[in-house]
Length: 98
Image (cartoon, rainbow, N blue to C red; front, side, top):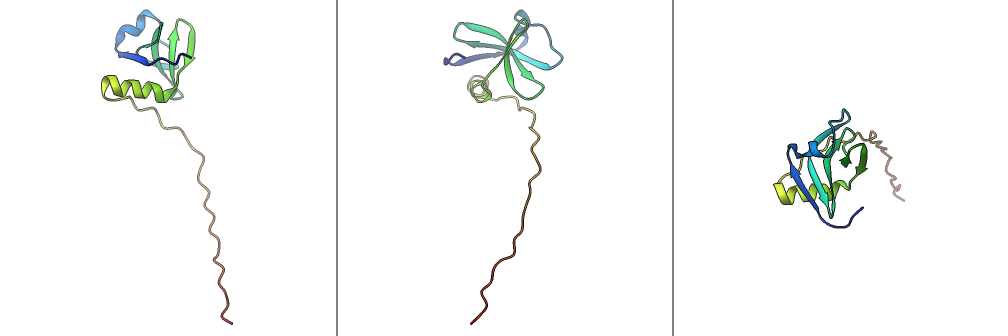
């Protein structure tokens, strides 16, 4: 993956790089250095660059940072389901008065 900054353009220009996919929501275009492609939000909450049938997963924090810098807001990713929290309550030890 390129270390250059992302340039993101929200809008329908993604159609020049990819076809609509049932497992992704197309947001716009993403440019990383000389690479350019469609920006997609996958059904599992990850961002990806799509060029034809090639899907390359992107660093989500870098994408959100670029969106906030250029558009002022980043679309919220669907919340990831987490395992239930286990709470264990232990009895306190108390010293007997001597």
